[in-house]
Length: 569
Image 1 (cartoon, helix red, strand yellow):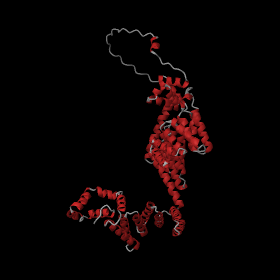
Image 2 (tube, helix red, strand yellow):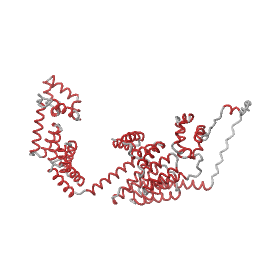
Image 3 (spheres, rainbow, N blue to C red):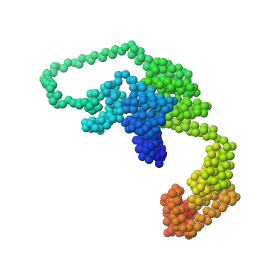
Image 4 (tube, rainbow, N blue to C red):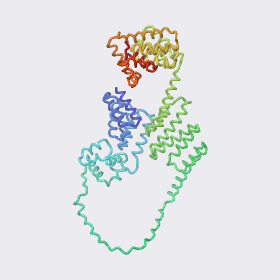
């Protein structure tokens, strides 16, 4: 139950529905309160909604339950960083790296936390806005408690938490002064009417008689602002770099890759503050098949982007491009793990559908490669023979294990599916056996054993009409198969018994209830024409005989008779 709720939470998180993910993770935690992974996942969902106080609580619970799990400290560092506690974040990331020194996510988080910790000109009030008790203090004070209902006030506090230097932007807001008073335990007084009256009111200005209107004088042109030579040169370089980028884009569209690289390289030399030049050049290298060069440019773009605090979407784009290049290399190296890890990092920066699609493709390619490497028909035959021996000894669970291993070694052998279906039948696992029998028929429609297995299972499940159809379909491929013919005979006998009322009322009721769950039966009974036909059978036999001349109607009636819904007497 907890795993199901966790799975729903993971799916909601992947789709960006973080509130829904929190609900599912909370449900899972109620069922499994000692599972550290659930608290970790809910912490990530809270952080995605910038609810860092709750994220911190869950992260602390994670490391409490599993102190040797590095990912818990990654969650803890992210929550501290979101609350503006850069020093605490550094400590958390360092602890995680002690457990897992090669973890790239922890390394990246530590670098970001250290950079935030040593930002110049830090506000002296920065520390008081850090820590989970901030909101508790604001809630306890009767004045600031009312402010918490104002969305702009909450955003103002969150902004200062993220960057304490931004407090200077809000000092003119009396609510911020009140907050400082609460956090510093100092009583702050707002200006009162009495204070305002200490200042003399300005004397009213007597209106002066307007002079005669003159013709409007031409407005003087504003003098151009003086710009330093350095600023002027920098603007010119940036403008020139953009021109080089546009020229590179044109060359790229024309598939003139060498020229495109020259233009992008020139743009990088002119302006190293725009990582799009690097990602564009990486795209050219990717098209040219120069995957190592592409990866180098993407790494530079990510590193430089973090230094410049570039848009997270641009960093995600660079990581996605790197993952694509690694995926291309994996076709030769047979190692998709680096590409998968890079796509996952990109998704932590920005959940882009294209990146998610590439991640799924890489994971699917990895799985297919593993299956190919495990493929061995010779070992599969050996496992099948072992299963056959155990089946003869009536050791059905052990036989299933060997048949399953045989299918892992060779998933295209219909005989193994047929044999495992027989085991499942003996064990009473009807749905699993039916699934194997259908897979057997899918792999080899001419293999009569698949039809006998499927028909026998349907007969045991009291779906006699379906079993009859299965046996008849098998006879089309093997008309002289005695087992199939015997199956047809048994089904017809059972259907005739039902029609003659020779089965118990309880069995008939059970069979009808099962038939009503069949979508085909439901469609027949919901068809207005068929409803009229059934009424005519009861009230107007002459019209009913006319209906039976229609092959489609006749087929549907036979279907209802076979399912026990209609009885012919």
